[in-house]
Length: 455
Image (cartoon, rainbow, N blue to C red):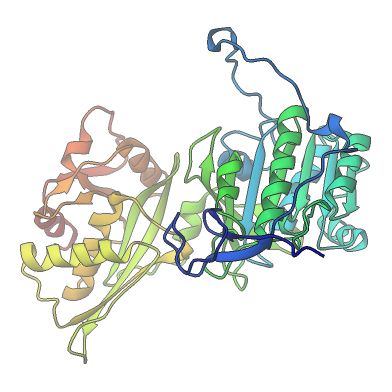
């Protein structure tokens, strides 16, 4: 009997090699090569109408460029993250930690779509149909147009799609689905790649909006080959602590809308409920009159969000001070501390510095620099900021405060929540009408901002 041929695949980028490498030649990752049995996929006798299509090449001038139609899900936060709703024929990948609420969100979405007259097929490879029914009973997601199937064989799933002909399809999860023609185990690189390719063809040819649920690794990335995220149209991450009630749905890729949009939900006994005003949520437990606290107006996609930054500066007992940061880039925090030392004369070399973004939000835009600098300076001088001040602006290495985009939206969000003063770059004050119910102070340097905020 001939020995089966094997190949090695990189779990990060999908690089193929006939031999094993400790370091992937494609993405330079260590210990990412796994061995898979090489197999030839048989195509004889397969149900061709599901995913095979013959189309002729067209001139790009003759192709209609109408706006993509949208299907509103009935959940406003999900519509925002997707860019206005679900696009028919799109392929969406949803990842998140175990128990975070992915299945709950998709089951509620499925029920909301059935109330609009759409037919939904929910494929569960991890739970039985009775378990899914119990979850639906708890959520109140019962509808005659919601079909549930417990199946992992791709050919059986294709037969169910042919019979039911749904407009919305959920696969929970892609790591449990397998093709019989591929000899490797479910969840392997080859199985995930081939199954995702088939679902992509089904979605595009038949116009079925398809959602794939993906497991995540201990590092937080979606398990399987990295090309999985390149194949789909949208990649959504469901984030949050299982011991807290709030969940964040974040878009990191979206071919039909803006990226870095977030939707905020609260987990309760009856499932997930929308949080329509996240700024009020993030500031609900903010202490007043405490040194080291500052409120920043940040942009999450197209939405302005007000978040509290907390800094703690204390004397160190070690030769080198500690720098700990949660919720933003650690290197950015170190850069701002260096600016405060060099340009403002603050002696922080013998001080431990800790920074935390309240609410579990991750801030990655330069506009938060000014609030970080003010919160660290406030804690170092042990002088609190005004409780109704908001800050935003980018800090340069020479101590200047640079302008940022969408200043008008940030200011209006602060005014809506009752803040009285905004300290922002003077360069961003031009070109828009200032609201009358909030004071706007423009600054050019960090020294000017500290003089106003800590007077």
